[in-house]
Amino acid sequence: MSTSPISAAQPNASGQNSSARIIFASFIGTAIEFYDFYVYATAAALVIGPVFFPHGSATAQALSAFVTFGIAFIARPIGSFLFGHFGDRIGRKSTLVASLLVMGLSTTLIGLVPGYDSIGSLAPILLCILRFGQGIGLGGEWGGAALLATENAPAGKRGWFGMFPQLGPSIGFLASNGLFFGLALSLSDEQFRSWGWRVPFLVSAVLVVLGLYVRLKIAETPAFQAAIERKERVKVPIATLLSQHWRPTLLGALAMVVCYTLFYNATTFSLSYGVSVLHIPRPTFLGMLCIAVVFMALATPLSAWASDRYGRKPVLIAGIIAAILSGFTMAPLLGSGQTPLVLLFLVIELFLMGVTFAPMGALLPELFPTNVRYTGAGVSYNLGGILGASVAPYIAQVLAAHGGLSWVGAYVSIAAAVSMIGVLCMRETRDTRLM
Image (cartoon, rainbow, N blue to C red; front, side, top):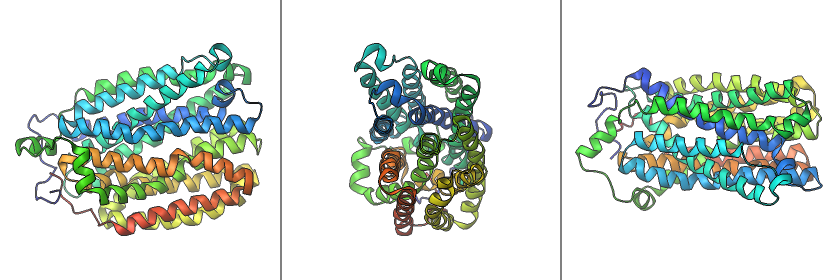
């Protein structure tokens, strides 16, 4: 059981997992993984449609690009099943290395796929396959990184240690968006559409080598080693999870919806809408996103600290209430088209993303016992992605076209309310001991 009185603060048998090494290994992996993922999200908003889908309508191109964006979110739960199985059966370390390889290879190859003009319908087919591979890799990444941090955390600091994988997305997004921003400033539109958009995908190969170097030097977590010694591993973790732990899996997925909806509507949809409808220059909007994501990064440690001090649920409830209210700001702020107001909207949404996202690094692992923790945390996290992110930009695009930004804002508020239900129905996990 996850409540047994064995602290994860004890050193592992090999003595290799120092706090600094654990923090860096859990952070660098998610930073690279989310860099890879956000590279595609940005490209989907800017260039994937025209390059791979030769529709006459710009709206049809955008919708097609966002469909391919959603494919990865369908793949992510499959990745969490696959890598979760091996993470709970074989170990956290080797599984994390494998997930990083799958993600990095898929991302790099996307940068090499010719466009529709070169190879016809084979281009979008290859794109969808590789996008699916991205989702498989990311599906196995987050759960392992969160476990690496939380299963090694000292008593009373699990929220703080679990925060470092949550910082990865902020840094990954900043690196991705910053690179696109630099390309937008230095290249013409023709150069960017022709080859410039491929550069961030190819850079991923270098980052993956760095991530692998760090991950290969970590040791297994003490909680997993203890489970091996007690012979507690189960043969099919997903079967045990669904038969015995389906309720926390569902509640964890519902709790994640607000994080995904806030982020992808504030970035992918807003970027597409701002450039194509509001006619804000692409470099300007990318620059605003770079500023706004800094506030997401600042909110992450503050929220993690508060979750250790006051509990996971109080912090999440406060953040979700603010997220519900933030939906009403979309039309007046983003819809104004004025740079200061658009920036304020982006800052609000991404700050609240940081507030609601940070506690998840500890909360989701705390919901499950060791023998299904990798699978359970990963499945909850990625099912939340299907509910909150896979179709979020697509739905937002359709709502904006038919009802305007006020409808999109209502969608954000409703998604946040769904997460509120999940959080209110789950137990407080701050004092749970991992073993």
